[in-house]
Each structure stands twice: as structure tokens, then as C-alpha cells.
Length: 583
Image (tube, rainbow, N blue to C red; front, side, top):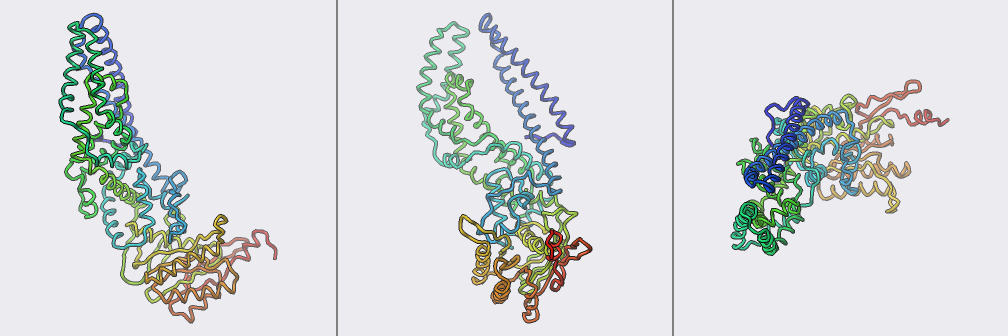
């Protein structure tokens, strides 16, 4: 798709396209009536009027092609406008209209259910700009992947280079959204591409005889008063020959990808062919597009696709009986399969990678991410002014946090609604972002090579006869098993063992803290049991942090700032009073 030299402002370009499309539509209509008049006069009065028809038919086809070009361009620009609108929605954190990716939630996953990665008001809704089923699944898979610093570093470099090409990011998205509408499963098509085509040498002769014979007989009947029955016999004879290739082409028709898929691949490849990259990861997935040959291959496939998907069209059926077009179509298919067929399934996987990278780069630019990220071999987690990405920029409160190598466990206490859970999720979701190759929502973040595990949203399940307490124990067991295997675990446990009585909860919490400290695990445990904060006196590897609140008259005030030391006061008593409970 050739874009205008001046694309912006978009409304002005749309207006210009509308005028050109209207002019083409009128011209095409006038040309159609002219051709119809010439055909009627030529058949009924003077055959000489039929002579210009082939040339006018070519002109008519050119007008249709040009009209379709403007139609595609209009769809593309409308998507660009919609992208601008959606980016504004995302920045305002109005996410209810975006795909939540609920099916990617996984109950037994180490962290994805606890960190708002999927579902309503989720990170997936912020990140996802993919259009294909495979691209969407690859993004979700990447979000759920366990922490891998080496891969994250490579992805980071690729994203940072892509961020420098905002036009490519927008145009790639818009093309996919405009044309990738009704995706079909292509597995049958890819399998068919690997199979040799049933082509016999004498089909080549029939491919040549069909048009020559059809044109000769039609000319004779129209211009030389040959018997019309000869044309009927020709069609009857041709029908028998066409049955030789009908089965093969019928199979291709059934498993053929949608026209929108092929068009999108062609436009994407044209965009990528204009780019050059220095990052090794980008160079690797750009290699297929570097010489400009792939877009030509897809363009020829698009032309074949037009014939394949219109084989049952009345016009094609008539022309096929007259000129035996199916032999030409099968010959084109054979050549395309031989030259390009084996590469197409690989290219689709590469396009899925491009969709993910472009989603992440577009998100980075939209949020103007500039935070410094450092992966370290040291056993530490440190960040400054870290914020939760799902909160509005003017509402997110930044916090500093340090967990040095000689500390194992943070005991996090605080009043109700003071920000403990949100802070823990802030650390977890930023770690997921870093693992995707993104900069954190922070001024800086330094993190070791950890595996991430969480225990936060533990709910009962009546269908499986599972209580919330048992669900929490299952999550804790996951952490212990990973730690016992020698993994360097970073854990986030919210309101630990809340499903049991105070005495057992304190004893169990203390035992768990000591057991985890004997391994490579470190992390944060939040609790309302202020008694546990005394452990800091005896356990050198434990440190207290807290969130506070202040009560002023009948109002509870929060600053949502992390502080060292245990929480000095709690607000449950006051909250119950405000809710009408009398003491």
C-alpha cells in the first residue's frame, strides 16, 4: 500500500481520498454503461463495436484497482485515528473497552493471577496492540514467562531501538487492524503448501489451448457466423478436462487464508523492507525482509488468492468454461508453492514476534518510559520512586525500596487500606515489565536474577471443595518447593495465613520466615500481626517496613509512603466505627 507523501493531518487526507474515490466511482459507472452499450450494439448491429471492449475492460479493471487502493487507504487512516483515541484512553487508564485476555489467567501459575496481568483493568489491556491470535498468545506467554535476565536484556535493546521509529509502530498497528479482520486457521493451508502439486506436463498444453481455442471460437461465432453449437461443444469438452484439476483447486479453496490476512502480510513486509536495524535481535527477525523479495512473493500470492477465492463467482465460472482458466491457476499455484511455499508458516511466526515487540515499543513511547533498569548478579532488589502502571500518573504515589543482599525478609505492616497490597503488586508487576524488556515505572530499578512467586489473591472454590486457607497453603508450598530446588526466589505474600486463628498464624508465620531464610529465597510478607515485628530483634536477616495512616476527626488519612520500622498504629477500630459498629 503506497501512502501519500503528506499523510497528516489525517482528516484532511481522508477528505481528499473521499473526493478521489467518488470521482473514480462515477468514472467506473460511466465506463460500465459505455461498455454495455458497445456490447449490445456489437452483438445486434455491427460487430466492429466489439473491438474496443478488451481495452475498455482493462481500463475498467484499472479503475477498480485504483478505487480499492483508496478504499484500503481510507481504512488504514481511520485506524490511525482510532489508535490515537485509544492511546488517550490508555493514558487515562480507561481500559474497559480493551481486550482483557481473561483466558490467559492460570490458577496454578506462580504469579500471573495476583499481579493484574490479565482481566479487567490489567497490564495486558495496557500492552496489547497485537491483531493475530498467534501474536496475542505470544504476548501473553511472554508476560507469564518466569524471570530470565539474559533474554530480557536482548528484548530491552530491541524495544529501545524500535522506539526510535514511531511511524513504523503506528503504521504497523494500523495496517493490521485495518485488514486482519477475520483470521482463519492456517494449519491446513501450511500443510497443503508442503505437499507437491498434482501437475502433469500435458496440463501446460491445455493451459495454452484453452485461451487460444476459446478466443478463436468466440471470434468465429461473433464475427464469421460460425455455428453457436461449436461453442457449446467446446464448453462441454472443456468441462470434462477441467474435472482433472477440480479436486485439487477445490481443496485449496477450502483451506485458503482470508484475503485480509494475506494483504496484511504484504503491507507489513513492505513497511519492514524500508527499515534498517542495528540490534542483533531485530536484524535476525528482519532478515527475511531485507532484500525486498518477500513482499513481491506475497503480492503474487495475493493475486492468486483473488482467483482462488472467486472461483465460484459467476464471471469466473463463465470465463473458466470458455478459456479453461483453472489450468493456469493450478500452474501459478505450483510455481508459488515451489518457490515460496515452505517459508510462509515461518514468516507468520516472525510476524507474531514483530507484533509483540511493536506492542511493547508503542507502550513504552505512550508512557514515555525512561526509568533506568539494571540486572545484577548480586542478591538484591532496589528501586527509587517506583509506581504502579495501572494507576493514573497523577494518582500513583512513588516509593523507594531497598532489600540488600544481607536481608532475607521484609515484614510489611500497616493500617487497612494504607497501600501494603498495592505496593507489593507494584514491585511484582514492574518485575514482569522488566522481564518483557521494558523500562520500569520508576526512576531506577536494580534487581537480581530471581524467580518470582506470589501468594495474594487466594480464594475458595466450592466446585473443587477448596477453602481460601488451603489455596494459600498451596501457593506457599510452591514457594517452598522452588526454594528447596535451589532457585533464587523473590516472593510476595499478602496477609500471610489469614485463614486461621491468631496463635497458629503467628507461630506458622515465624516458622515460614525461618524456613525461607535457610534457602535462596527472599521477599516481602505483609501481616496485621504486629507481634511478628519483634522478630527483627532476633533475626538479623529480617527488616520491618510499614505504611501508616492518621485519624483526624472522623476521617482517616493516608500518604501511601513506605516507611522503615513497624506500623505504630492501626485503624480497624476507627473503620468499624465509621461503618456503624458501636463499641
